[in-house]
Image 1: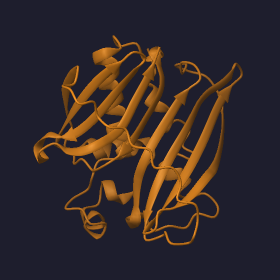
Image 2: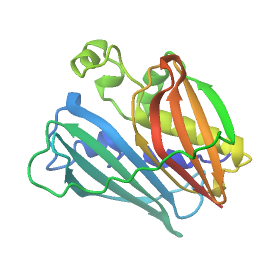
Image 3: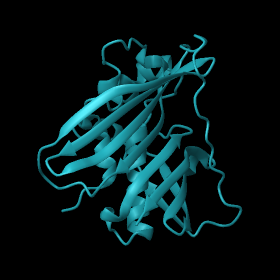
Amino acid sequence: LHVLPSFATVAGGGMALAGGLTAPGIDVDLAAVLHGGQTVELHRPIPVSGDATQTSKVAAVYDKGKAAVIVLRTDVADADGPLWTCDTRIFVRGEGGFGGERGPSERVQAPAREPDRTVERAIREDQALLYRLSGDWNPLHADPEFAKVAGFNKPILHGLCSYGMVLKAVVDTVLDGDVARVRSYATRFAGVVYPGETLRVRMWRDRARVQVTATAVERDDAPVLTDTIVEHA
C-alpha cells in the first residue's frame, strides 16, 4: 500500500476545511464559503499506518475587499519527526472591508506550448456523497436547496476531491505511480466541478516540477484548478 500525499488534507480532521470553520473565533456563514486554495508540503513520505500529533492554527486573515481569506495551517509529526504541513485558504464572501492586509496574490501562467500530457478523469454522479465520508459535511455538496442559496444550480464537488483526483492523475501519468516522489502540491480553486462531469488534466513538465491545469470538459473547459504546481524528486 502507498499513501497519496493529498490524504494529508483529510487525515485527522482538525483544521482542514470542515474542522477549521468550527475553530474558536471563526463565525462564518457556510453559504458564503468557498475553498480558495490548498498547499501540502511533504517532509517525508506518509506511512501507511501509525500515530501522529497534529498542531493547527489560524495562520492569517486577509482582507480582499469584498471577501476575507482565512488561512488555516496544520503541521503533523510522528515520533520520527515532521510529516507534512498543510495550508488551507478559505474564501468567505461578504466578510472583507475590515482594513486588514490584502495578502499575497501569486499567479502561475500556463506555458505557451502544448501540454506534455493530457488525461481525462470521469467523476461519478455520487462522488460528492462518497467524499462527505472524509468528514466535510458542508451541505453545499449534498443539499440541492442549500446549493441554490449559495448560487449554484445543484450541489458541487468538494474542491479537495478534485485536488486528490488531479494529484493521482499526475502521479500515475508522469511520476510512474511513485507517490514518494511528491515533495509539495499547491493549487488555487478557480471554479467548481459538478458530479457527473469530466476533469481534463493538462500537465507541463519542467525538471523537478509539473505545472497543471484542470478544467470541466462538458462546460467548454471551464477552469477548475489553476496556479497548480507539483514539485517532485
